[in-house]
Amino acid sequence: MAKALNLATLASLPPTVARPTYSRDSLRPGILHIGVGNFHRAHQAVYLDDLFNAGKDWDWALLGAGVRSGDRAMRNALKPQDWLTTVVELEPGANAARVTGSMADFLPVGEDGRAIIDALDDPALRIVSLTVTEGGYCIDPATGAFNPEHPEIVYDAAHVDAPKGVFGVLVAALRRRRDRNITPFTVMSCDNIPHNGHVTMDAVAGLAQLVDPGLAAYVRERVAFPNSMVDRITPATTDRERAILTERFGIQDNWPVFCEPFRQWVLEDYFPTGRPALEDVGVTFTPDVAAFELMKIRILNGGHATIAYPAGLLGIHFVHDAMTDPHVRGFLDKLETEEIIPCVPPVPGVDLGAYYQLVAKRFANPDIGDTIPRLCQDGSNRQPKFILPSTRDRLNAGSDVTGLALESALWCRYCAATDDAGEPITLNDPNAERLKPAARAAKDDPAAFLGLRDIFGDIADASPFRTRFETALRSLWQNGTRATLQRYLDGNLM
Image (cartoon, rainbow, N blue to C red; front, side):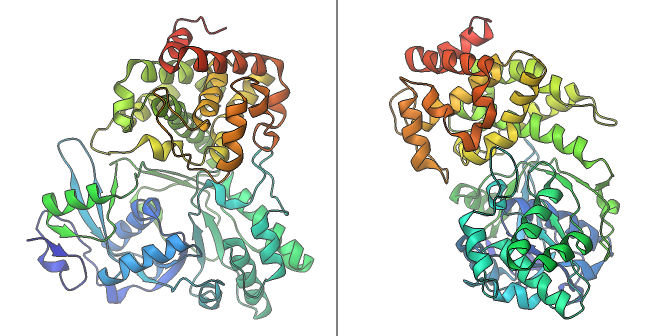
């Protein structure tokens, strides 16, 4: 009979399940983490669990926190199991489960962030880490710059004592630390954003500027924002994963995490108030995070976007099934090798071709159960970060963009919210209400979609891109996705 996960049942779990070797009573929070989702629990929390299992740095445990309704749901799920999480690594034929205990507590999630602000009065909390998604940084998608007119920023600037957004909470907490002469905490982004440390600093300092220019100067001069690159494919948890956990491992976990075996974390070593010895458990510390970051965002995240929209239009649900489709896989291979990888700068000690082959192997892992709808979501935030920078680089170099324009056209066609068989598509995007009509109008006038200037920026004005985009989009509507991909593979989509 399956056992409900909690501290009382930990010792009686099946012997095949790894579990913490340290006492939870020995942990002391040193990191407050905002955004306790699946990726965080499969990545940062696992690295810390490894470190604690090695008998090191027990004063760097996690204190969970959040500002969204989803954070409240996560807290409600984890509380009955004493903040423990089951992590299942999905290697075909060799799945393995472990229970992690690196989170010592999880703050109540309120409407005004007050619990987080109060907790950060504690000087023992020396790092605040974030996984708030690519769209959570209040930036202009077309330029990547901080947007002071973002509604969340405008609200928090006017309500700094009771903010609702993550950056309002950080500004309020840093203001209190400054006023009480407490050393500021380090802010560490763990989201897939180019130069994520710089982007985070711009958001925090930008909001602080609206509140108090002196506070903004304090943020820029005294607060550390290390850059990082994070990587681990971690699909959403559904009843499928809960059932597998119960059947295979005899554990009932309200919100388990399933993920691939591969994980990577590259960090800039910029922690003035100290940090855990993460290099002892496989984290790479380097001053050149940007090279690793660009490689991963262009090749892996760009690769996800490449397969997502043709697969979605063809009615393919699982990522591993998309990788066995000859047209989708062919599109991925050709686009990566001919247009994406050639504009990725060299990375120290890394063969970019071999890295891509590893990425493709990871995508094809059938045990992951990652879904195409997950990859398709939030395109209006992900396209400007994962695809359009490659397009811009190639345009600036005078190089062809046929494949990248086709990728953008596939996204446009997907945003029309029906697949090739006429079945409805649920468009999971914060800008869905304006994407959908623009995409439908683009069937007759492709410029209607390129008119989304906050997404495409000046790329929409580049004649080579516009021409390729229009050709691809007309082919998708007239001939369908599979025939259009074949034309591209044959070199006839001109």
